Length: 87
Image 1 (cartoon, helix red, strand yellow):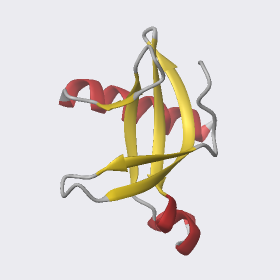
Image 2: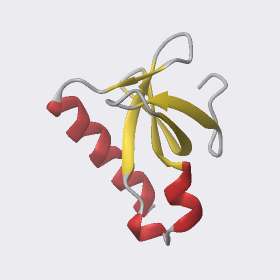
Image 3: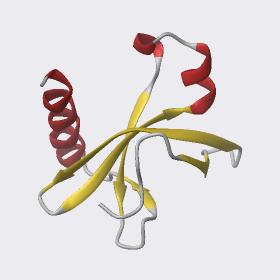
């Protein structure tokens, strides 16, 4: 994977055009594509681990993060992260 590492913080715009800081919690390569698990920085600071909403994003070629469009791809990535977490 390029330059994205656990602990990196990015700013994304949510659906209301509000800036949200997200922190990378995990990285994974699956079928030649890189993915990251992220959580909202604010929640990570305030909550115990089990209360954080975790999102999965795809890493594009230029290290830009994008949403996973298909449910099928999301399920595959979600399962792979869960499996990696249990090792």
